[in-house]
Length: 330
Ligand code: TYM
Image (cartoon, rainbow, N blue to C red):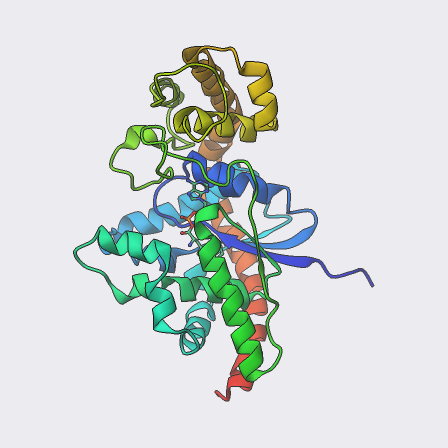
């Protein structure tokens, strides 16, 4: 009998298209994990409704688009499970149970909750509860590793705390998952405000590169990226704009930032921006072609979801049966 593969669980919200941060910080790296791990890549649509102003029609549309994006970025349904969170019974049930073990203070201290709730007039309880649902997503499949960008690290830490607490309270049940964060691309910054992370909801969309947006727009955005008034392509805290472009370039070409500095150090800012733009475009072109092809075949996309759903549900049901027994539920 062969050794069982370790389990990877991760997801990306269906709130509009992937941007370069989601791609470099997350999805691109997921591809290389597919050979060695059993991977559960899911679309957390229940997380997406924590945003009070979402449109249900758009959400359904974006959910299917997200699957096509996963696949265009290299996730392979023959190797990995790809499914929609709300189509599996277990995520919300486990979230409720884990919530009963979570101190509310820890939720109020979450960086993302603080940042998001400050921006809103209405703060739904779902936004506060969000990290518990994420912990449930991870523990439901008994993940060993959770590949995410830097911004999700605190949430994975909560999942670890809850795994430990559950195991102590009810007996050994869950693996304690590890976050898996890469060095380059773990935090891609806005091209317009390079001290702020690149984000889908940034009101200044010139700072965000969506990986399936038209090529010309991408080129323009990179050429007009905000930099400092100095010169020299060097990686320094005082040059956040250039450092961000170097990081993007390194993540795409597989070079280290040190090599980028050595090879491009004497380039002008505008020359370097052109190099980055061309590297981004070369990389994205085939992904875009594949994405638009996939979108034409909704039947195939639905079949992928159906197949994965069966496997994911079997895992989830097995885990929930165990959890209910341990907790004393029927
Ligand atoms: P989401 O949808 O915001 O982002 C998806 C992935 O992209 C990473 N990311 C970034 N990486 C680098 N630079 C950036 N500027 C950047 N912006 C986003 C995120 O870290 C993430 O890995 N709560 C999660 C979704 C989720 C999940 C889970 C993830 C729900 N349940 C269970 C892992 C496991 C989220 O909102 O990611």
